[in-house]
Image (tube, rainbow, N blue to C red):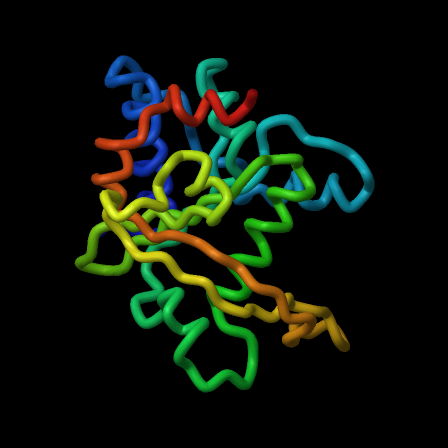
Length: 196
């Protein structure tokens, strides 16, 4: 099984082939430092083209996809699922709370319309988690769509004494869809239409 960096490369190739209808495997690639440069520059009030999240467009055709979504790629973390947001006895921050905080912060900072987390646990298929608003716009909130919808209260991480601790509660809705179903049933044209 691919580790984190290899999973990111493999996923970028698969997204490239899907976005280009099989014509190109080089539309997307991993961002430098998982978007850390964009995060640091944003704190200084500076924008960084194409470096938001874990996926960058290295071909002009891919820019529109990343104008719609901030994307995080996660590999492993076998005991962590979004269901933890609902049924786990919480003391500290949950991994999914940190991931959601990161991707939603990237979405807001870089003016994206939605967010996406693609998570693959060991010996499992990748799952695309998409924010509820984008699901609605892509008509992925119907009973004909594979997947599961989760709405949960999460606690935004807050820094206290250089340590991340639970902060303000907010509600987040998202849908998890098997990656293969997503690329077979969601058209890049539908995502491009979200720009207008």
